[in-house]
Length: 282
Image 1 (cartoon, helix red, strand yellow):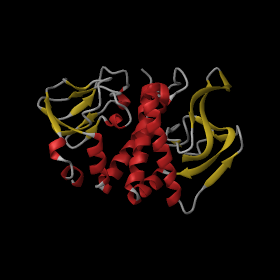
Image 2 (cartoon, one colour):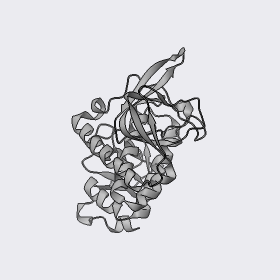
Image 3 (cartoon, helix red, strand yellow):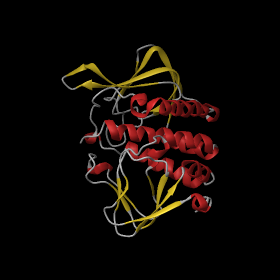
């Protein structure tokens, strides 16, 4: 694998863990980097609040702890799944350099990350306790990083020669959760987007989930069987200019521009982290 071969060996930290020993705990610093299993297997902590649908086992060659790409502290707990499990920690800058040198591996990670998000069962999703604020979750420094990701995402426009663009008037519907025919992913080019849920007791009442700014990719969560949208979306007070996308198109673009692929991957990892932290049933 080109990715593994390109890693700077002098920067790698390897550790051996015994069954059920913590590899990385929620709240721990992610300064050691991303984790890769070289021997044995690891698992997400079964005592963690997440349901079975997002608890996973990571076997030889698999990577975990990628929330370290968007957060200075771990958002989840991971443990060794068997004795003598050998884990190598890869610094973010080394992970980045090696990943973009292996187009096939980068595309595979992006595909698996999108699949992970789109396959969360509708039955496991709930309304967040309060509107999601990335600044509250990750701090001002985190928000600055996310702004740079959004800015880079706009480079997608360079590769979209036959753009399915759409201009949405102020405060108008983009998609609704009860319309299964729209399963697109969207890139917000200008304006703002407000995502919300309907109040179960009064569907006409909007329960705020998150507000999005230009450069955001959204529309990943599915209503049912990879169709439709779990959340509703409408334009903000100044309207919204959008581009319709598909997962396959994102993957094709990632093969053309590794730096853009890195940005898209971080966007997807951020979305996964936010959803699993705020919208999954305990």
